[in-house]
Image (cartoon, rainbow, N blue to C red; front, side, top):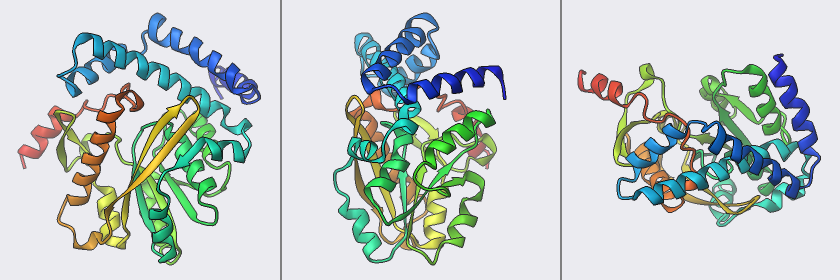
Length: 298
């Protein structure tokens, strides 16, 4: 375990025990450091916003960028705070506007795939679902991080209310086949960037060609599981709301890339409504040119 992670874990254990008003003091200090002093990925965020919203003037880009960093720092501290929260506290902070869509599928004993993105507080989405849909069996698909200690730290948070809730990305099909005779929901953050070798589909997204994974569509068709889009957004500091929209009730009957394309359009609408809520600091379009050339050469 690295010294840096030891220090982080020590500070995280203190943060878990603090009231939220003190947690947000820490968030503000982190914002000052990341935004003004270190300017963490500020160039990446600015370029992403400019390309996604060419209609925004310089002032609106600046305002959106600043709000994004404030939101990101809040999310980081909310995640760190999570182990120190009572289940009922987290439950009341994560509200679902139309839960009947999930209840109806589960009452029909139909497993479902829930497709979401890195929007709102995405790390609260798994615990939020488990706490607000008691009795339903759910799983969260995760991609490995480069730091194994930090990955285990996050996975322990994801497992707070269910020990086997985390599914490693490369073992998704195996897990879903194992549980296909039970009624489950499987949560995917489907807006991640595929590795260049895994790219086989691109779509126009936020004014630029963008590669997307098509694994959700393939799983839905092979297992005949409905696909539901979940939009997460911040109501106010520390409180979030999520809503559902059915993408496909009969995935086996859909055309190629129909499910993926509908997910992309819904995600784009969510981002345009609340741009500061999305994760702009990742290099979402780093493979765009190479991927375009790759697909055109086929």
